[in-house]
Image 1 (tube, rainbow, N blue to C red):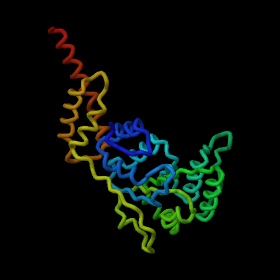
Image 2: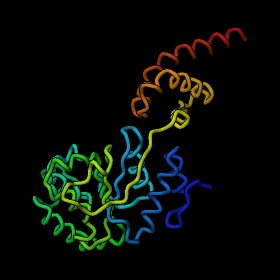
Image 3: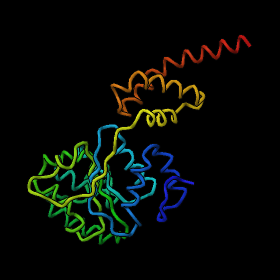
Image 4: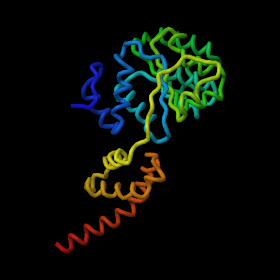
Length: 264
């Protein structure tokens, strides 16, 4: 039985999500409660914040892809202009992929937010999409460096398009710093705290190579965290350190196995 429960999604899918999102059961459960049923009108905008390496991007990608929810996952570092941002969202909506066959062109040319609202509405009508469409804006703090109407517009996109769309902002800064001075619609906020040492131990230990014992790998992770936890709590950086130092530990482990076999 999965630790996650929601009548709108199959039990096997929830089990898979739970397996892939260790130590984030509370945040995932909250997200599923906010999303509700597939065809229900979801909250217009969600603001997810937390330090780097706390699993914000990974958790959202895992939940949306595993549950097969229609979405556009946009990195604001790559889409650094409003036009790139709008066209990328429309490409995801229409499942359009720039390729040599279409001369790497976007589905629609879109220069302004008004054009985006019009083209988005037209796309929703053509596709007859009844489920909630999720637009995830990663590194959302970069929106503040674009057009002034962009952030307030995305916060009210559900109202402007009169459609079932939820915009999710992923960022490292708090809403009080993010909020524009002109005032805007207030999103629902969700905080991702840093992983504790126990949580990091559980996550990293679960990724043990199949040819090594779980106990041996857990002991190795415990030693590594004892050295690095006070100066680094970013799980991405810790995973890198795990790989770097495990190559040295492997030699010692294999030598120990060989010596034991000889003695026997």
